[in-house]
Length: 361
Image (cartoon, rainbow, N blue to C red):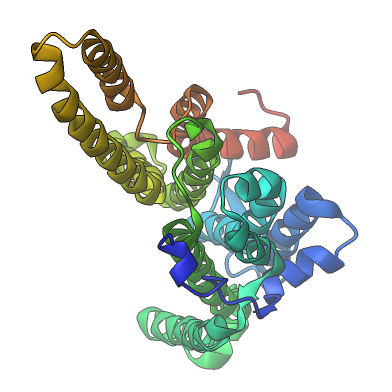
């Protein structure tokens, strides 16, 4: 009897609920990209509308060179809108990933684990509902406290605050904090569930390690989610005049992506390594039995020993990390994501200037 046979049939909670972020995409007729764009347009569009209605401050201004320039506060609003949009989209991206890789994931698991694997596509475990509600409450409270701190820092009354761009921050920042916390919880939950699924229901077959490449792709997706959010956060410091800060931040973001990738595939690596060690121990046992007979002149034993030696080399050379060449190539492209904010900060202002004044890059 194997270790997984001694455990309950499912290693995961099969009772699931649909979080609000996923429900938004299910109900929307715009599809994934249309809905994601709509979230950003509503968020930053309302910021621009509030800025122009209140005029405190306007969205941008004409600088000394006669070019239109985005206000610092407006840039903050743009970045926060990007963070809100990314946080909402990450949960749906996770669900789409499970849907896309469902067949490959099922093929990599023993039959007892397939029900649990299907549950990954069906939402969030009911046992996690309380955690989501707690982080929702903390996020809403944190967003409101942020506005209280802002009124104190600006030495303005609550009435003056809501008659300025502060009104947008009052409405959106609680939801921004909430979405960010829930997105982080979703990433942590998915990683924990995947580790449990691997521990309970993945059986290593050294002859079919290619079936485990699915876990490398899952690790790549986790790394991609990290790098996308890191890239959005880097918009806060995307200032060509502070290159040393940008370089340090990009290096930390890439390091985080590498850690996210390796942490996601490490449980599989450990199981493959354990399977190789167990197989090598068995090979060495048979080699020890054949060695004495081979030294005594037994041709059959000598032939068996040679075959065992070749098999030993084959086992030792079996890859332990389920990271294919395509995953490596895609990750090398993903690490470019944190660089995009540096270019984006420049192009955004130039594009806005061209749209308003017909200027050239």
